[in-house]
Length: 345
Image (cartoon, rainbow, N blue to C red; front, side, top):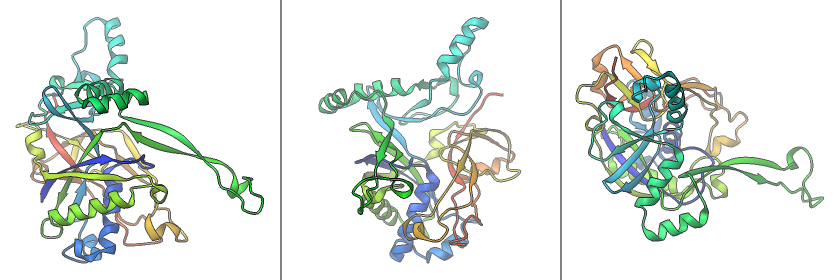
């Protein structure tokens, strides 16, 4: 399988976070509507997905330029703080440092370097990451950012909505009651990067690019029909996740939510993430659009393989089936791309 790095530029707010399993679902809808984007029918590709996935997507991460070049902001690994930072000997200082370190949600990866030992990596808070982004941004972007008064690359806020009863001309109760929805708005000039591993015998680079471009044009996630989830595809190029990690790895750092294969890993450090999924597109209006909830290990998990053969493939995890009554053939991406890393014992 070939891994590609895809750079996106958000054009609107997003109602749904750009996580790997959701991106896979959107891409499958593109294949369902345009058979020319896949070398075989989607139904055949999904039947073989548990044994041989034709596409695996990572979640999206900020990408910016600083004085040293291009930097990727990945999630801080889910490990005990002692495995990530050099802790002071004094107990009081250690407690104070723990509070500070917990705010460092981002691990900075300079392009061309290696994620070897985590203690040698730089970490930043939401506010610190925003300051670094502003420092390397063009002058016109900095002026725009100053006028928005943002403090983070992605601001989450609640937007109120009203449904008008056309008979009374006002809102009311039940289906006409005012409601609020969450929305994610990225700072001007922010670029996001995601990784995709594809089976070149089923999906080509050109087909991958076309599918993602169409998702960006039509909108991603919730409320796409009202204008949310638009993005522009900036660049697609080959990537080597192995070269990003340690030359002597003993663990996997995941780049998206996954369902680890039973018995494949020893020590596992992760935050649980429950996907309360629902169908999109035309199945969103079916009699039962909701899927069975799936508990996953969220991105930035650290999984220690029981067998080193795990490192022979660019992805880990499993496919998840039997999650929908509306469409029995539905498959959830329980796979995740990963960076091979070394974790100190």
